[in-house]
Length: 341
Image (cartoon, rainbow, N blue to C red):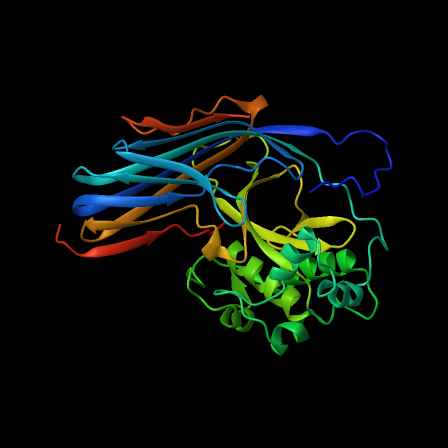
């Protein structure tokens, strides 16, 4: 993520990269669903080094009700209902976004992490109060000495907070193994720490738990990350996934984003969709259905630079635009889409 307070040795404006993102979510049900209500957080944000150029949300069947608003954290939210029998639901989000490169953290920039912790309770500005909220435990992210102890190797005395946060990012990447079979959306962070394996959601939750256990404000970021095919091979449709990383607050600079899964500062390879205290605040698509029996979820995500637009978008057969912007039995079940990149 770029920020005007960072030093850019070239003196030039950061280069911009434009992406097209096609995100198809499909639910297949063993019995007809009679009524369903859904909440989508799929519209990328504008700001923090990112500009939303175009966004379209479609569904099949088409919704009978639709509302667009924003949540407590400022994320765009689409709420829609389908009131006709269906045994399959397809939701497609099409986005075009322009993002700028991250400017490297200069050694020694920003206050020591102990100063950040000490200053939080005294900062009554809107920015400071919003950051302070992100220093406490949340539903999916506890705080505790085990997390502070793990982070101690990166947070030595008087170390600048951003430098320490980057070191923790690299520490997690080095100590943990990416393993999609090791966890579920409900796996506790303490279990992730013990197993030393998981997916991007787990690594983001763990890093946030470590930071908050030291008194440093941190929030969860939901979005997409660019992945590149092996040399000489074409980009494939639908093989990408939603992604998760971490945003850390530094007084005088703002929020800076770190990706422990990919051991880097988030920049022009990352597209931001939503911020929250943890995954529970930013699930891309969730809802409640009446009927349906069992359900099977399938997801296809394609993230590609617009200069590579050979790959067609995964569009449902009879989708209808429901949001667009420029710039079986009577049982009730819930559904939620997790992040596993």
